[in-house]
Amino acid sequence: MTIDWNNFTPGMSLAGGLLIGLASVMFLLFNGRIAGISGVVGGLLKPTRGDMAWRIAFVAGLVISPLVFAFAAPLPEVRIEASYPVLLIAGLLVGIGTRFGSGCTSGHGVCGLSRRSPRSLVATVSFMFAGFVTVYIVRHLIG
Image 1: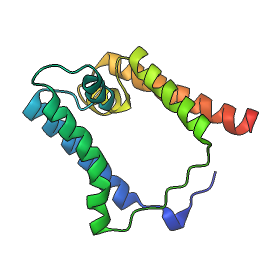
Image 2: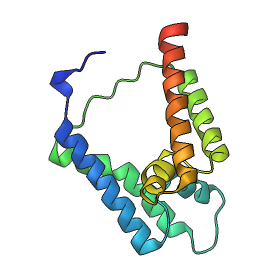
Image 3: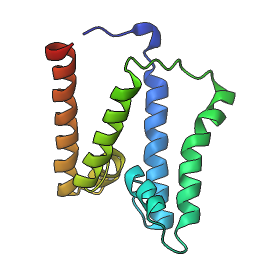
Image 4: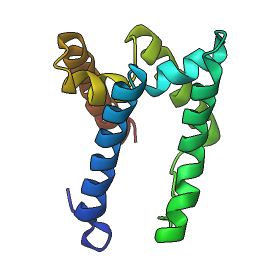
């Protein structure tokens, strides 16, 4: 394994992690809800009266924030080395996994672990292990 030192950005990575943590804490304190993306988006698919505005604002913030960031610094180059069918299948598998896991990496990994939830610890370890195995299979056994 090699590190691409030209694109190694520990400062930006730390700042991003701090912002995610701060936003998650604020969301929990002010709304009493976990900032899990799958739960937020899932609520948009099954609307509940009086519950839509904050969900729409949350998702809109996710979409708009890279545009705001672009005013401060150039956006990094996005390079995806997969075909559209592979991306579609991967997205469906992630969606199915979040339903089986009762949440996503942001809900379990960021919010659940910080609350010392045993269920979130098991879910996060499972997500990470599945990711490691998938990368190994795709990069070393198949490709």
